[in-house]
Image 1 (cartoon, rainbow, N blue to C red):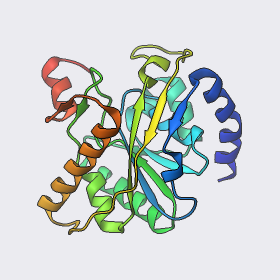
Image 2 (image 1 turned 120 degrees about the horizontal axis):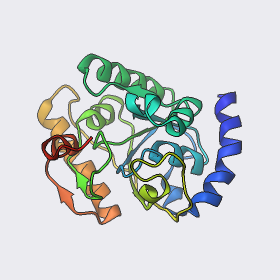
Image 3 (image 1 turned 90 degrees about the vertical axis):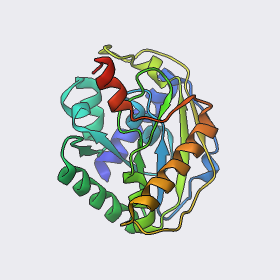
Image 4 (image 1 turned 135 degrees about the vertical axis):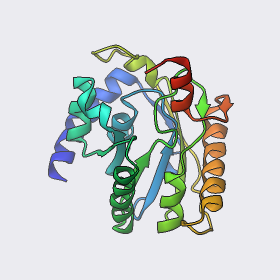
Length: 220
């Protein structure tokens, strides 16, 4: 926690200077208690920018490649306390969700990108069901979050961030009923969460997984 606060103290002014953020709906983030921040995903730095720009401690799930790929993002991910996720291992993914559930049950904030990977073209892609598992398992409210312009701060292939204006829209909290062990409930809740994100972001929605689209298109 102390390291997080030190990093945040240094990172927040830098994020404001580099990104000139416009944030709306910040009052929807509870001052205390658990909540899930479910955000669209445009840049490798998304998981860093939200914790840097929001007042409360936010732990994000981030894919393993963000820790071992770009050295800039890897440094931020480690110092920010993000939870690494192995997208190719169901066991590892469940372990991450279990750790996230523990955080929420302790009254903390957890951030997740339901798309599972960055959008390849700025559109919003189908969400993976982990976010619904968390919401139904813990009962924590879900805040739909729409990021914009973050892909301009660290474009794909870039090693160094560049100044760009970004937007963050945080929607009203959503609560869901259902059984976290029921596949239909998980799919229904995930789709409702993605619809709420799309309402905030205005992105075109694509009813397929971003990873599948990338694979079919030969993209990484």
